Image 1: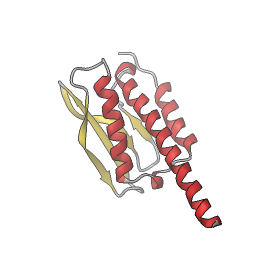
Image 2 (image 1 turned 60 degrees about the horizontal axis):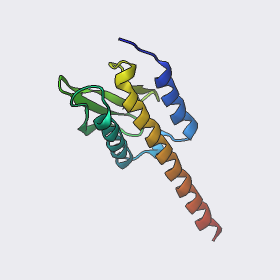
Image 3 (image 1 turned 180 degrees about the horizontal axis):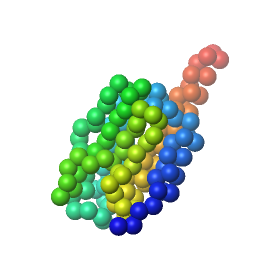
Image 4 (image 1 turned 120 degrees about the horizontal axis):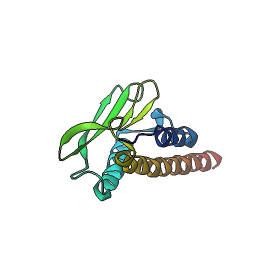
Length: 131
């Protein structure tokens, strides 16, 4: 199994550099992440039946943690993305580079969309405050 930590660290850096924090993320935002990841897993040519699970496990969010899991023809409920209470974001620790790739691509896409939405909301608030 080939395994490299660098692509996962790049995804963590993308989140950190975006300016997003857990406090910025609602349950709906995590559901949007699940949908984006699901799109990428479904189109990935890696594991037969590679899909996101419908449930998101959230404990004391945003101070606690949240976990999004995936499944395939031979497993169920494996980590896709976990937001740890210590700020660490885990990406499919069970997966090699090939099988984590669609998760990382989807995560980057989601972070970009969330950062854009946060910037747009901030601009609207500034406009409203200036009026």
